[in-house]
Image (cartoon, rainbow, N blue to C red; front, side, top):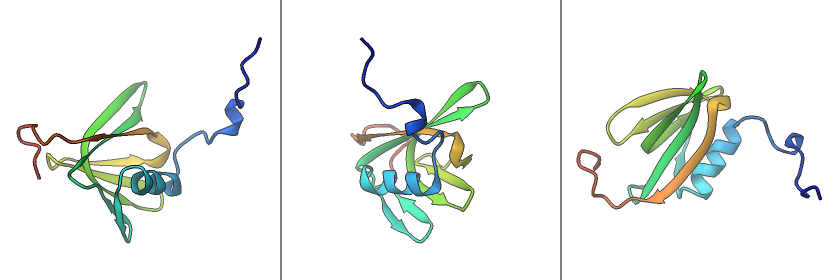
Length: 105
């Protein structure tokens, strides 16, 4: 018997500005001020991004600036990544233990 699941067309094919902002604030306890969403230090946020034929994992995200067509993710290490919304595939949230050397803010 076939599984009763929605077809692929029932889902958006890629992330949007609105979807990413809602995910960060609703599930990541992010606080949005203008175009910037700050992730609290107690939340460990990770972005999964499509990069050519490989995936890029951006961990310890502390803030994301949302432009109309792209986002700039800043990490606890001070790295900045400029991403197209359609390349962001998923966001993972966990609780930060604060034990990672060099990752404290």
